[in-house]
Image (cartoon, rainbow over all chains, first blue to last red; front, side, top):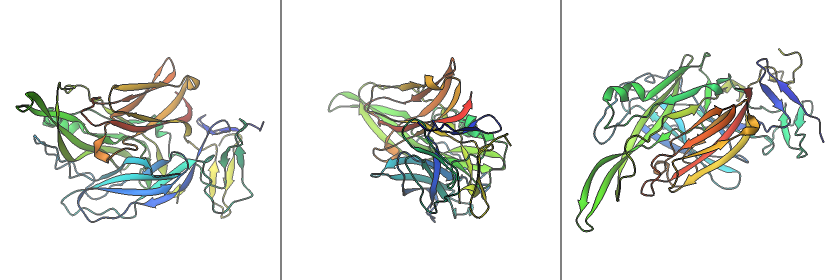
Length: 292
Length: 113
């Protein structure tokens, strides 16, 4: 039996609690630079015991980042290419305590926009599973869980997860829209969303552990296969990612569609257009300067 | 500043931590969402956190295949009678279309709803 420690912030939110598992900064990894236009994906591998929280650096007021131009709706796709943004689109276990994050960054195809330089993802892991190493400050506060596990839940010698604001109550909502079905104006106006978070977003990163990939299928056509005498449904899978960028205190989430593919299958068509849910993304922001 | 707080400095004098000024996230659980077909949404409730604000994060795809090949659409949290309820929606749960594959992480904000 240990001694319980609970602290609160000035807003009466818990900041340390010896019954809870907290997160610690494990380091940052550069997003590779590139020279290609369009959507580029990078695999970034790093170590973390247990499931990591990944924060991706927010592009801030970059040249071209505010551009809404280039939205084109065709019957085979919706190349929303003229817009800048980054997001993490996949996170995979790559072996014991090793993870691979797939980060997507979209660089507009014209207009002389800048290649992102010096962008990082920042990694946080549970302190009870990870010890960051480095200098071990003997003159700091530490706390262990009081549940008998002796798990370390706070270490003042390391950089514990500190959010830049209580933004986790915010929810970025992207409404469902269908290329080739919804009106063009709806696609233009409702494929993006933005929120004023009330503080300057320069030099910040956003929690990337959010579903940003969206692959809405829609029926493109059908024909009868005379070999089998069955109806073949042709479906288009649209590859869409929600990318982040920021300007001032406003966080923008924008959809970029960078590809599509066809898929054909026999039998009854599974669903109409009505099943696609809005994308709801929770928002958690950190200040990069606190996690060098 | 709160009346009492834990404050920690680095040897270089940088104030690293002030518990009166920190908002953070705590681990609640992580859960793999997978399946080739057969469900269009799945719901998890957290009665132990009744009245408290949880924060769900959903990464998709998580483990299988390429980035483009798998579908999970969305997760949302609601508070039914104060009980945090996380629902993950899966689009087109047909075996003919890409599979569901994602990892749900639920965090605790340290705050009430």
